[in-house]
Image (cartoon, rainbow, N blue to C red):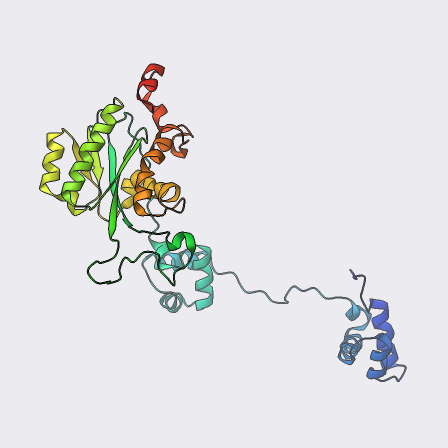
Length: 326
């Protein structure tokens, strides 16, 4: 018997109170007051002593007297098989003659209780081109223009810092601007520009500027990957890729992970440039893009390439680095 330090009763005390009631003629209430316990507790130990003797005064095991029977392995397999055929828990319970609670417990243990568990996501296939310029990823991020510090910094949403979206006479707010981004698959060297729209003319101008930027680093671009935006599906953009000798690859619809390097670069640029500080205007924010890109390419360790800087993957000599480093 394991008795804690503040226990009112031990087996000896229980026997004493039971004898006082059964043989001493004392009332349960009086014995309860003497031992500092409740009268119901006195009655419990008296009844145990009367029916089981001294052995009944010992603490009983908390283990239930009867345990549920384990479900047969064949039934468990049948439940899982029916679930993979998209049967509901109630249908499975009726078919297998098992309670719904048991079916739920088995499916939860097999991690098939939710419908989405029946179609687990495909494993992520990571890829990386071997040569810089073999493939560049291009994407576009839409950002709102502003003429004073925004609510992301002030936290004040009751008075929107930008009048974008409010009809105020002739103008329709501050409008939008579009950040065109490009990142090399092998080296992770990035290039970006803030342009007024996401039309085919802007996309074509950005592609030319990106090709020229990589050429200044000694990188010849041979392939480009984009999503299925209208500007990239335009015949003019297709013809430009042919003229530049680029193999144009478009991602499968609704699979942004295919263009994941560009998607990830967009998130990094938002966190470390666009929303990193309190810009007074969107023009000031756009002016800071160039210096931030320089830090990203030349000085910032990149987790995807073992904490190396992107420029280090070009294998440039010291003389070449000095000639192109600003």
